[in-house]
Image 1: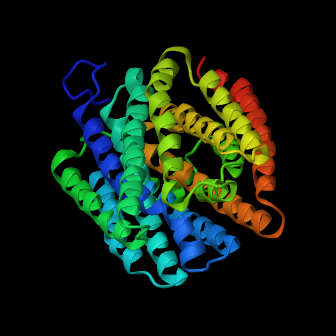
Image 2: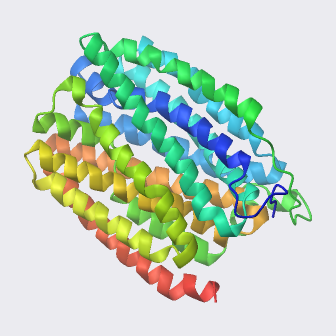
Length: 401
């Protein structure tokens, strides 16, 4: 394990650099995503079901790429080049959001953007794992998530300011989003270093693509199944924006939903990552998904803005408590030579679940009512929590004895 020649408990420069890269790209993306659902539904006249299809299909198709990019990074023994390609594709899509005149343009831009995310996700997470020791891995992943979330806070704030000053000029917001995306690529190229690790690979051919998947242990596959069920209860955050508009939040202030959610996310991510490094992942993850159940119940039943924001805060706390720790579990269970493959599969399964969840949410919203999607989410998440507890008690604890 590479320690960068420094004290093993010090967060390496690579983690900080990747965190800044994530911050800049998320700043750009959240400037767009915090207004995109409203722009589509009210500006371009797209139905909520079509919105769910755009959100879900973009994630679902791109999720297939995530598994292959992870396996490819293991095969090439190179992480950075795939990370650069992934972030580069996402950067190239940003102007197309501003130029879009139909839902088809938006879908293509979202698809290529998610394709870029699919390519970069697993190699980036592998770079972090390769750059850190097990003693600080939960903290390292949570730190990157926190910086990512800081960008997700700043993006909607900038969107609110621009909308307020320009009387809801959506396209100007979309043009401004190009700037941090370009800066992201600059930091990535000059600030992130490739890791040099000796992997136990006797033959490249035996560890490529589909053959890699057969090396994944049953314990990890069962964990992936559990993650899929948990994420079936986690549809696109675009529906949170639509719910806030339905309850009565003014259009120019709708991006504040993402600000509140991501501030809550950022506040809890690193402390709970550090806690998990000391006491284990089980309690923080279970509590985090129980908080998601509570968030869904509040958002389903409330008609007031105050309670709506309470639900949004709990949603953000859930993200901060769980997202980095799920990655850390995969890093702990996966052998070094299959780390990229394992991360790729995790991202693929998460994306596939989001695809299904967003389609279900769009259908229920379109043909029934908005509250029902949150009730269904709470039920599915509860089932997922049960699966996670069973997996932890029956498999994870035995592996780590």
